[in-house]
Amino acid sequence: MPKILIRKGKKEFIPELDREMTTVKAENYYVEDLNKDFHTAFGVIAKKDLQKNGEIVKSSMNKEFIIFDANFSDKYKKLRKLPQTIPSKDIGLIIAETSINKESKVVEAGLGSGALACALANIAKEVISYEIREDHIEVSQKNIDNLELKNISIKNKNIYEGIDEKNVDLIVFDLPEPWKPIEHASKALKVGGFLISYSPSVPQVMDFIQELSKKEEFLVVKTVEVIERLWEIDGRKVRPKSISIGHSGFLTFVRKVLNS
Ligand code: SAH
Image (cartoon, rainbow, N blue to C red):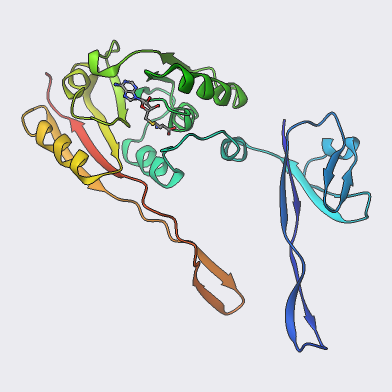
């Protein structure tokens, strides 16, 4: 199991300068290979110390580090992400709004680097993902293996041509033309199930909604943009962080409410 190694930052009051200054810069490392010593800019952590969990270990330069086991989310952050990966702020809302759980069957397209597929497979019973590009399947397969997920099936298929599954609880489209497979989604979803489309641009959302309006069995619940703002808390100096997280995409939540 990989480990997280942390060097906690420290601030101290420097009388000569009459102010607080950072005397130890915070550092955060991800240790994948526990079978050899780990090198940092602050000395080497011995292999035997890498086995510890929830303890303080000292480097060869006598600097202190905290070590603990990496969890799913720590490993997830290390995945290789291709462009247009759905960020966690959006994934969080998908999971909360649809309440998928260990009984759920989920279909998604396209797989991309598999970020969304992995996050959903960590919660659902099974995830079936459609992807047309073999090079993307290769990247995502490595990510899936790294996370040791066994409940993702990848289909090297064009989802515009059909969805093989039936009785699906949730379908997520992250596609250039999400309006094209609406009819397939209608056949694959169970009543009460959700269809979610994730699109970076407004015209995609407009065309998706326009196409849905022709179908009686679908209820458009809402379209949202999730905005996450980071804050800096430094004593009484509290303000939004100056680096902003840019636009990711719009999420449109749709529910199948009638037998089709
Ligand atoms: N949701 C993914 C990112 C998807 S990017 C993540 O979180 O990592 C969009 C992907 O859709 C690309 O990999 C692209 O190759 C794939 N794609 C585009 N059209 C498709 C289609 N008709 N059927 C299946 N996959 C498709």
